[in-house]
Image (cartoon, rainbow, N blue to C red; front, side, top):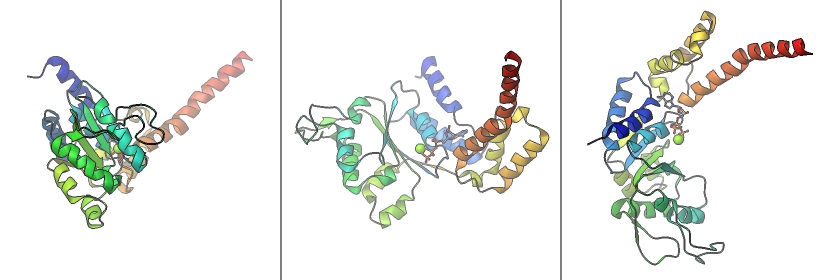
Length: 257
Ligand SMILES: Nc1ncnc2c1ncn2[C@@H]1O[C@H](COP(=O)(O)OP(=O)(O)OP(=O)(O)O)[C@@H](O)[C@H]1O
Ligand SMILES: [Mg+2]
Protein backbone atom coordinates (compact mmCIF):
# COMPACT_ATOMS: atom_id res chain seq x y z
CA UNK A 1 0.00 0.00 0.00
CA UNK A 2 1.54 3.30 -1.11
CA UNK A 3 1.15 6.18 1.33
CA UNK A 4 0.30 9.73 0.12
CA UNK A 5 3.83 10.86 1.09
CA UNK A 6 5.38 8.09 -0.98
CA UNK A 7 3.13 8.97 -3.92
CA UNK A 8 4.24 12.60 -3.65
CA UNK A 9 7.86 11.51 -3.75
CA UNK A 10 7.32 9.42 -6.88
CA UNK A 11 5.27 12.12 -8.60
CA UNK A 12 8.05 14.64 -7.99
CA UNK A 13 10.58 12.27 -9.56
CA UNK A 14 8.25 11.64 -12.49
CA UNK A 15 7.86 15.36 -13.16
CA UNK A 16 11.49 15.55 -14.33
CA UNK A 17 10.70 13.34 -17.32
CA UNK A 18 8.32 14.85 -19.79
CA UNK A 19 7.48 13.18 -23.12
CA UNK A 20 4.74 13.00 -25.75
CA UNK A 21 6.25 9.95 -27.45
CA UNK A 22 4.17 6.77 -27.04
CA UNK A 23 7.28 4.53 -26.67
CA UNK A 24 8.75 6.75 -23.96
CA UNK A 25 5.37 6.94 -22.19
CA UNK A 26 5.25 3.15 -22.11
CA UNK A 27 8.84 3.12 -20.84
CA UNK A 28 7.95 5.58 -18.08
CA UNK A 29 5.01 3.36 -17.05
CA UNK A 30 7.33 0.35 -16.95
CA UNK A 31 9.79 2.37 -14.85
CA UNK A 32 6.98 3.15 -12.37
CA UNK A 33 6.05 -0.54 -12.14
CA UNK A 34 9.70 -1.52 -11.66
CA UNK A 35 10.20 1.16 -9.04
CA UNK A 36 8.15 -1.01 -6.67
CA UNK A 37 10.44 -4.00 -7.27
CA UNK A 38 13.98 -4.82 -6.22
CA UNK A 39 15.34 -6.58 -9.30
CA UNK A 40 18.23 -4.90 -11.12
CA UNK A 41 17.43 -2.77 -14.17
CA UNK A 42 19.67 -1.82 -17.07
CA UNK A 43 19.03 1.55 -18.72
CA UNK A 44 20.52 2.05 -22.17
CA UNK A 45 20.46 4.96 -24.59
CA UNK A 46 22.62 7.61 -26.19
CA UNK A 47 24.24 10.34 -24.15
CA UNK A 48 21.84 12.97 -22.84
CA UNK A 49 18.65 10.95 -23.43
CA UNK A 50 17.73 10.96 -19.74
CA UNK A 51 19.12 7.71 -18.29
CA UNK A 52 19.82 9.33 -14.94
CA UNK A 53 16.31 10.81 -14.83
CA UNK A 54 14.85 7.35 -15.46
CA UNK A 55 17.09 5.95 -12.71
CA UNK A 56 15.50 8.49 -10.36
CA UNK A 57 12.02 7.29 -11.34
CA UNK A 58 13.12 3.70 -10.70
CA UNK A 59 14.25 4.87 -7.26
CA UNK A 60 10.53 5.53 -6.89
CA UNK A 61 9.09 5.93 -3.44
CA UNK A 62 12.34 5.12 -1.61
CA UNK A 63 13.47 7.65 0.97
CA UNK A 64 17.25 7.27 0.89
CA UNK A 65 19.30 8.96 -1.77
CA UNK A 66 20.47 7.28 -4.92
CA UNK A 67 24.15 6.46 -4.50
CA UNK A 68 25.73 7.06 -7.88
CA UNK A 69 28.90 5.21 -8.77
CA UNK A 70 30.61 6.61 -11.81
CA UNK A 71 32.60 3.66 -12.97
CA UNK A 72 34.84 5.79 -15.16
CA UNK A 73 35.86 8.10 -12.36
CA UNK A 74 38.15 5.78 -10.43
CA UNK A 75 41.04 3.43 -11.03
CA UNK A 76 40.73 -0.38 -10.78
CA UNK A 77 42.07 -0.78 -7.25
CA UNK A 78 40.43 2.28 -5.82
CA UNK A 79 37.12 1.34 -7.37
CA UNK A 80 36.85 -1.90 -5.42
CA UNK A 81 37.63 -0.14 -2.18
CA UNK A 82 35.27 2.72 -3.05
CA UNK A 83 32.44 0.30 -3.73
CA UNK A 84 32.98 -2.40 -1.11
CA UNK A 85 35.05 -0.59 1.51
CA UNK A 86 38.34 -1.79 2.99
CA UNK A 87 39.87 -2.89 6.26
CA UNK A 88 42.76 -1.04 7.85
CA UNK A 89 46.15 -2.01 6.42
CA UNK A 90 44.74 -3.94 3.45
CA UNK A 91 46.80 -1.81 1.07
CA UNK A 92 49.15 1.17 1.23
CA UNK A 93 47.05 4.14 2.15
CA UNK A 94 44.28 2.18 3.92
CA UNK A 95 44.90 3.83 7.28
CA UNK A 96 41.59 2.88 8.84
CA UNK A 97 38.53 0.72 8.18
CA UNK A 98 36.22 2.35 5.71
CA UNK A 99 32.76 1.36 4.56
CA UNK A 100 32.07 1.45 0.84
CA UNK A 101 29.23 2.79 -1.27
CA UNK A 102 27.29 -0.49 -1.17
CA UNK A 103 27.06 -0.21 2.61
CA UNK A 104 26.31 3.50 2.63
CA UNK A 105 23.54 3.05 0.03
CA UNK A 106 21.65 1.15 2.75
CA UNK A 107 18.21 0.07 1.55
CA UNK A 108 18.25 2.68 -1.22
CA UNK A 109 19.52 2.46 -4.78
CA UNK A 110 23.06 1.90 -5.99
CA UNK A 111 23.28 3.45 -9.45
CA UNK A 112 26.16 2.08 -11.52
CA UNK A 113 26.52 4.76 -14.14
CA UNK A 114 28.46 4.03 -17.36
CA UNK A 115 28.73 0.35 -16.50
CA UNK A 116 29.96 -0.29 -20.05
CA UNK A 117 33.26 1.30 -19.03
CA UNK A 118 33.77 -0.89 -15.98
CA UNK A 119 36.94 -3.04 -16.08
CA UNK A 120 36.16 -6.73 -16.69
CA UNK A 121 37.90 -7.78 -13.46
CA UNK A 122 35.44 -5.74 -11.43
CA UNK A 123 32.45 -6.96 -13.39
CA UNK A 124 32.91 -10.39 -11.73
CA UNK A 125 32.45 -8.75 -8.34
CA UNK A 126 29.37 -6.89 -9.49
CA UNK A 127 27.95 -10.19 -10.79
CA UNK A 128 28.35 -11.76 -7.35
CA UNK A 129 26.73 -8.74 -5.76
CA UNK A 130 23.74 -9.05 -8.08
CA UNK A 131 23.47 -12.85 -7.96
CA UNK A 132 23.89 -13.44 -4.24
CA UNK A 133 23.53 -9.97 -2.77
CA UNK A 134 26.90 -10.43 -1.07
CA UNK A 135 30.31 -8.80 -1.24
CA UNK A 136 33.63 -8.74 0.57
CA UNK A 137 35.44 -5.56 1.55
CA UNK A 138 39.07 -5.23 0.41
CA UNK A 139 41.19 -7.18 2.90
CA UNK A 140 38.07 -8.40 4.70
CA UNK A 141 37.62 -12.08 5.51
CA UNK A 142 33.86 -12.41 5.64
CA UNK A 143 31.05 -11.96 3.19
CA UNK A 144 28.75 -9.02 3.85
CA UNK A 145 25.12 -8.74 2.85
CA UNK A 146 24.01 -5.87 0.61
CA UNK A 147 20.58 -4.32 1.10
CA UNK A 148 20.51 -1.91 -1.82
CA UNK A 149 18.80 -2.27 -5.19
CA UNK A 150 21.02 -2.05 -8.27
CA UNK A 151 20.39 0.03 -11.35
CA UNK A 152 22.96 0.28 -14.12
CA UNK A 153 23.18 2.54 -17.16
CA UNK A 154 25.29 2.78 -20.26
CA UNK A 155 25.35 4.58 -23.59
CA UNK A 156 27.54 1.83 -25.05
CA UNK A 157 26.38 -1.03 -27.26
CA UNK A 158 26.79 -3.87 -24.75
CA UNK A 159 26.43 -6.81 -27.21
CA UNK A 160 29.29 -5.24 -29.16
CA UNK A 161 31.35 -4.91 -25.95
CA UNK A 162 30.69 -8.60 -25.26
CA UNK A 163 31.93 -9.48 -28.73
CA UNK A 164 35.07 -7.40 -28.09
CA UNK A 165 35.56 -9.25 -24.76
CA UNK A 166 35.11 -6.02 -22.81
CA UNK A 167 31.90 -6.99 -21.05
CA UNK A 168 30.91 -10.25 -19.34
CA UNK A 169 28.02 -11.94 -21.06
CA UNK A 170 26.71 -13.45 -17.80
CA UNK A 171 26.59 -10.01 -16.20
CA UNK A 172 24.71 -8.64 -19.20
CA UNK A 173 22.05 -11.37 -18.95
CA UNK A 174 21.71 -10.79 -15.22
CA UNK A 175 21.31 -7.08 -15.70
CA UNK A 176 19.12 -7.01 -18.77
CA UNK A 177 16.12 -9.02 -17.57
CA UNK A 178 14.58 -5.58 -17.18
CA UNK A 179 16.07 -3.29 -19.74
CA UNK A 180 14.80 0.17 -20.52
CA UNK A 181 16.06 1.64 -23.77
CA UNK A 182 15.73 5.36 -24.43
CA UNK A 183 15.17 6.31 -28.07
CA UNK A 184 17.40 9.19 -29.26
CA UNK A 185 15.64 12.49 -29.82
CA UNK A 186 16.45 12.49 -33.56
CA UNK A 187 13.93 9.61 -33.82
CA UNK A 188 11.24 11.47 -31.87
CA UNK A 189 11.12 14.95 -33.31
CA UNK A 190 7.79 15.76 -31.64
CA UNK A 191 9.56 15.43 -28.27
CA UNK A 192 12.09 18.07 -29.38
CA UNK A 193 9.18 20.40 -30.22
CA UNK A 194 7.55 19.48 -26.93
CA UNK A 195 10.72 20.40 -25.02
CA UNK A 196 11.25 23.71 -26.82
CA UNK A 197 7.64 24.89 -26.81
CA UNK A 198 7.26 24.17 -23.10
CA UNK A 199 10.50 25.90 -22.16
CA UNK A 200 10.08 28.96 -19.93
CA UNK A 201 11.87 31.14 -22.51
CA UNK A 202 9.60 30.09 -25.39
CA UNK A 203 6.73 32.30 -24.27
CA UNK A 204 8.76 35.50 -24.48
CA UNK A 205 10.42 34.72 -27.81
CA UNK A 206 9.76 36.71 -30.95
CA UNK A 207 8.06 34.83 -33.79
CA UNK A 208 11.26 34.90 -35.87
CA UNK A 209 13.21 33.30 -33.03
CA UNK A 210 10.56 30.61 -32.66
CA UNK A 211 10.80 29.87 -36.39
CA UNK A 212 14.57 29.58 -36.04
CA UNK A 213 14.19 27.05 -33.23
CA UNK A 214 11.48 25.12 -35.10
CA UNK A 215 13.84 24.78 -38.07
CA UNK A 216 16.62 23.69 -35.74
CA UNK A 217 14.33 21.07 -34.19
CA UNK A 218 13.35 19.74 -37.64
CA UNK A 219 16.74 19.65 -39.31
CA UNK A 220 19.62 19.26 -36.86
CA UNK A 221 20.78 15.78 -35.78
CA UNK A 222 20.65 16.77 -32.05
CA UNK A 223 23.09 14.02 -31.12
CA UNK A 224 23.55 15.54 -27.66
CA UNK A 225 19.83 14.94 -27.02
CA UNK A 226 18.28 16.79 -24.03
CA UNK A 227 21.66 18.08 -22.93
CA UNK A 228 22.11 19.77 -26.33
CA UNK A 229 18.63 21.32 -26.11
CA UNK A 230 19.39 22.61 -22.62
CA UNK A 231 22.61 24.15 -23.91
CA UNK A 232 21.02 25.93 -26.86
CA UNK A 233 18.35 27.37 -24.58
CA UNK A 234 20.98 28.48 -22.07
CA UNK A 235 22.99 30.09 -24.88
CA UNK A 236 19.83 31.82 -26.05
CA UNK A 237 19.08 33.06 -22.55
CA UNK A 238 22.59 34.39 -21.97
CA UNK A 239 23.21 35.92 -25.38
CA UNK A 240 19.73 37.10 -26.37
CA UNK A 241 17.98 37.76 -23.10
CA UNK A 242 20.84 38.85 -20.87
CA UNK A 243 22.10 41.73 -23.07
CA UNK A 244 18.75 43.43 -22.46
CA UNK A 245 19.27 42.98 -18.77
CA UNK A 246 22.86 44.22 -18.84
CA UNK A 247 21.72 47.18 -20.93
CA UNK A 248 19.16 48.08 -18.26
CA UNK A 249 21.79 47.65 -15.56
CA UNK A 250 24.28 49.81 -17.46
CA UNK A 251 21.70 52.56 -17.72
CA UNK A 252 21.07 52.29 -14.00
CA UNK A 253 24.79 52.62 -13.31
CA UNK A 254 24.97 55.65 -15.60
CA UNK A 255 21.99 57.21 -13.84
CA UNK A 256 23.72 56.82 -10.47
CA UNK A 257 27.11 58.15 -11.54
N1 LIG B 1 12.26 13.97 -20.80
C1 LIG B 1 13.01 15.00 -20.45
N2 LIG B 1 12.50 16.23 -20.46
C2 LIG B 1 13.28 17.30 -20.15
N3 LIG B 1 14.57 17.23 -19.79
C3 LIG B 1 15.13 16.02 -19.74
C4 LIG B 1 14.40 14.84 -20.07
N4 LIG B 1 15.21 13.78 -19.95
C5 LIG B 1 16.40 14.28 -19.56
N5 LIG B 1 16.35 15.60 -19.42
C6 LIG B 1 17.46 16.49 -19.01
O1 LIG B 1 18.56 16.21 -19.87
C7 LIG B 1 19.79 16.24 -19.16
C8 LIG B 1 20.51 14.94 -19.39
O2 LIG B 1 19.82 13.91 -18.73
P1 LIG B 1 20.59 12.68 -18.06
O3 LIG B 1 21.76 13.15 -17.29
O4 LIG B 1 19.58 11.86 -17.33
O5 LIG B 1 21.07 11.93 -19.39
P2 LIG B 1 21.99 10.66 -19.54
O6 LIG B 1 21.33 9.78 -20.53
O7 LIG B 1 22.28 10.09 -18.19
O8 LIG B 1 23.31 11.28 -20.20
P3 LIG B 1 24.81 10.69 -20.18
O9 LIG B 1 24.83 9.42 -20.97
O10 LIG B 1 25.61 11.76 -20.86
O11 LIG B 1 25.19 10.49 -18.76
C9 LIG B 1 19.44 16.48 -17.70
O12 LIG B 1 19.70 17.81 -17.36
C10 LIG B 1 17.96 16.15 -17.60
O13 LIG B 1 17.32 16.92 -16.64
MG1 LIG C 1 24.12 9.85 -17.17
